[in-house]
Length: 82
Image (cartoon, rainbow, N blue to C red):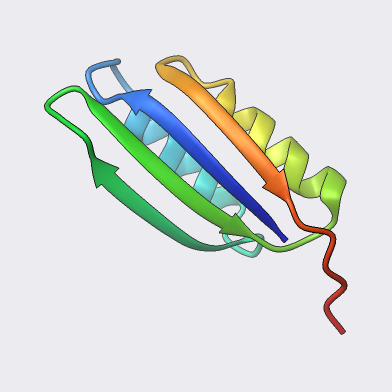
C-alpha cells in the first residue's frame, strides 16, 4: 500500500490533464483519490495505491515529475494483502 500527496499549480498549462491521464492509465493500482482546491492557484491530491513497491514508486515518480507539480511525497506501508 502507498499514499502519495502531490501539491501542484492549477495554472500550469495541462498539468491537471496530464495527472489525470497518468491516474487513469494506472486505475488498477490507484484505489482512491482526493482532490482539494487550496486557493485559486494551488491544488493538492492524495492518492491511495495498492501494488508492489516498485510499481507504486514508478507511478509516483511519473506524477511527481509532471511540469507544475511543486511537491510530492510517497509513503509506502509494507502490508501484505492475502
